[in-house]
Length: 233
Image 1 (spheres, helix red, strand yellow):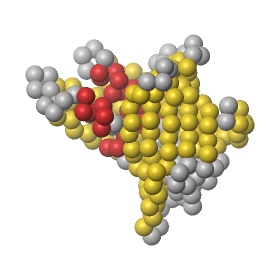
Image 2 (spheres, rainbow, N blue to C red; image 1 turned 60 degrees about the vertical axis):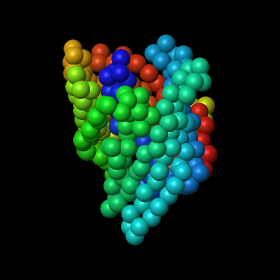
Image 3 (tube, rainbow, N blue to C red; image 1 turned 45 degrees about the vertical axis):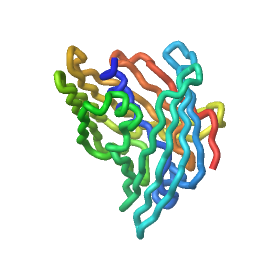
Image 4 (tube, rainbow, N blue to C red; image 1 turned 90 degrees about the vertical axis):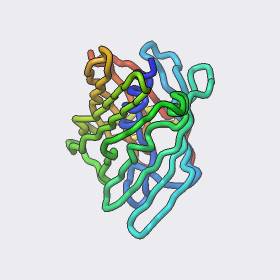
């Protein structure tokens, strides 16, 4: 089950982002102390967890800006699952998420000191200005785990990233005019895990960021839905 947890977490992280430089993108406000809360629902519509994000630090250096995002994930019963920090950087009109920071230290510690974990990949990129029909760069993360008697490699690649359309949607946090970003995550796992594609759609609102996300299984059926349930800045 460990390998499936890792692959799922990386795939979500490659799709979801929540902030960036205020002067770099109209869709991602960067204000220290801003907070975002998302409720995750399973395919039956029942609450599966709550993910809370807070912008804890904003740093500028010339034309470059970096923000640190703190994430806390709880399950449907309110039990803490993971906590992690990761960085966003905006430079030359491109927002980047450091792929190395997408892997929670808390999860790595669960494997023990004898497990060697190495990562490689490309940062997730998002142009400062988005428009319908725009195609975005692919992203990928590869995780290699050496457990002594056993080695395990997991690869997640996000492809076919494209702004599909404009759409107005309503969540518990309000009504938002959004752009819809479609993408597919290709997950490759060992020991019979195979190679599967998981489509998703993300609704992005001006001045807020991600408002809603729907993840689909390889057959195209809804697997989970995340909605913005609280927001402050």
